[in-house]
Image 1 (cartoon, one colour):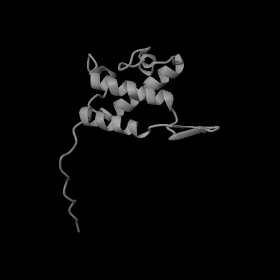
Image 2 (cartoon, rainbow, N blue to C red):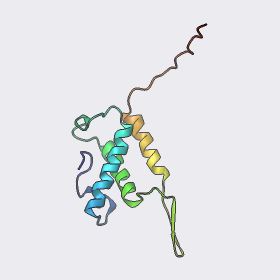
Image 3 (cartoon, rainbow, N blue to C red):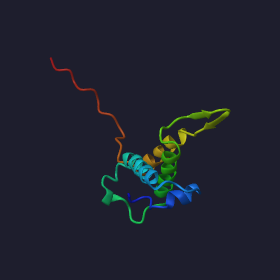
Image 4 (spheres, rainbow, N blue to C red):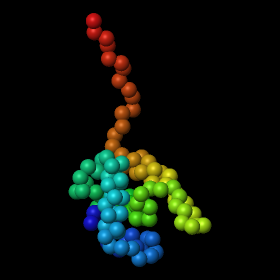
Length: 117
């Protein structure tokens, strides 16, 4: 298990039982998404201790998204019942993580390279 979310926290957050194997995978997926946007956190040993509340909250929500909708579909229809998923929320969370924990971004652009004859 990773460092952001402990075993059992996903079931508590989702307020329903979860399969242990699917929980582990959803947590790994969420932590991978978080780590890809939090570029200042380059190694597992770089995770802050204790985990900041905002980072944990984003990670647990991402884990619930990965658990509930692993394929990222927008809607699912079974018979006359259609279920809609909020797929934009993942992007919103990842953007917020990048703003809060992303690495340094250049604040200017380099001029065009000179043409050499």
